Length: 203
Image (tube, rainbow, N blue to C red; front, side, top):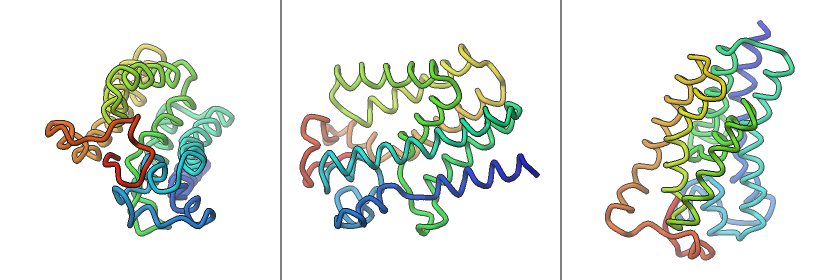
């Protein structure tokens, strides 16, 4: 029963849309109807600025981090870690409280990775920062870092359940970014240095 409650609460926590709540509290437009129509930190940056985006990013990350910390505290098996992680991630993507229309999941995935082990999250974050600096495209930096994430999990905490979980999460992230991939291929994807105004494309 405890394991079931962990997984269920992880999904429900993931279903709390930080982007929508932050925009409502700050009097901003609904992120599902503005910019890229994606309720995530990048789109909130576009429509509301850096402060709103930072709060959204923190909230989305905590949705992944907190269930993993709870799993550590309760000393559950790797399988429950994996199930709780996927539940939080899917809650963000398909939130029950907001019509099952959620974000793309990068921040929540990063929170999960830091929650599993700080070295996993740190490795993913370092790859993202390096790629973002070199190529200046947020979505591509996120994709590269998440594609490498299963390798980092395998190297740091090689439980098969966790490696498979991260592999599935990575495949879903790539699928959720398919529109960004199309824009990158056509040279239309927005760059980080230009993502300060509502007119910029991207996530």
